[in-house]
Length: 216
Length: 216
DNA sequence: TAAGTTTTTTAGACTTGTCTAAAAATACAA
DNA sequence: TTGTATTTTTAGACAAGTCTAAAAAACTTA
Image 1 (tube, rainbow over the protein chains, first blue to last red):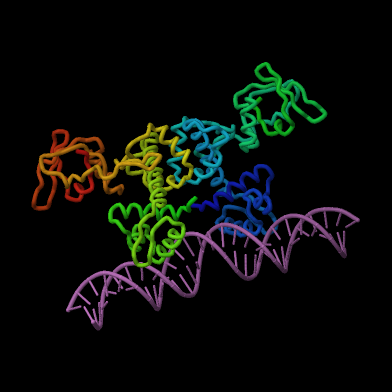
Image 2 (cartoon, rainbow over the protein chains, first blue to last red; image 1 turned 90 degrees about the vertical axis):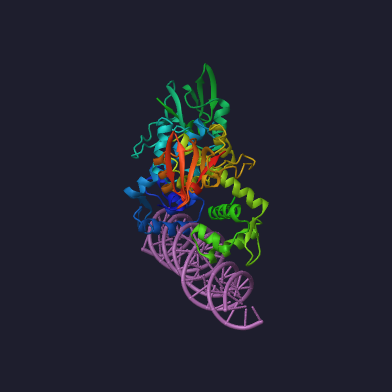
């Protein structure tokens, strides 16, 4: 249906446009580790195929078709991640690159049966919601710890940074999905956040607090 | 490691050389539905990478490295086919094209864990043996029904033709893997084979008898 | 608003894998 | 063994996707 490269562009554009609305050539180039000139070439092709709205120098957005394709890639990626962790016992910091390959397996029937096989999971191992077979899924229902007031708390439910460095750090601190935490204090000097978890206190940096998401 | 195209060439060469020893350019072209000139180009590349032994006009064979890569692709293909049938409930005539994509997922760790997850199956849904993680597997331990004497029999254990037309025909006749059959008679006029199965008689053509494999 | 900076696009070239058409090598047959 | 047919290779071209270098457009800021 679509080439591997086209799929990767659509996914990148989707992810960037969730954060920032219209997406620039340079943003796409950075996110795909390629050059702006290569991006321009590809944008023309995607526009020809009616997958993006593009006018020179204006940045791009996805068309309805383009968004459908992108969400479908994300569905496939997250279902495979879930499979790798829940069925094959990989750790949450090991699965990204494998899922990056597997998300391009094209059969819809396959992915729908995989979904069923695993009991229609709502979230992948990093807490990201998995779109259903119609492409519906909730977005943005989690908040970074840095955004909630002192003395409130919730359940760790996701991460914003998916790097294995970050995930391994969390693992070590036992700051894993499902844990209950409360914000005890924010140290004004450097914005260190003091958490209470399992009746112990834990200091995390502003950066970590920004990238760790909770459900209230 | 290797491109998708390289992997497909190695697999094709492997399958052809199991049947016929040294493999010709035209055979490869036919099996990959491409042109002889394209094959020649690719053969030079594969030879440069020491994956095949190749001298102009002489046909090719795989090097040890090339064979290792090919067997590994076959391992991946057959494990994914097993997964699709046993875990996702696909039928044996539906899985080939999906596995054709999935066999190119590169992680060895992934495939070894998949193997373990499924309990180290010995054969795929078509009865083909699955190489273990060292590339070892039995070959040629099954015989076509057309090759055994009248009044002998065995258990249906594999197929030579993997086309969905053939597999669907077998399904309809209930000539599926595990069934016990005995050859009652071979009608000399057209070599029709009369089988006994489940206390009933069943007529199959010479062609079918050639493509249906049994363990004695 | 004019000058300088940054972003984006264009132009031209390279790689991989493919093709067609033609040439070279090999195989076959009388 | 000589001529014909077949197989294989070469030559040159094309599409997809990438790159560098240079030009064009858009911002920024004084």
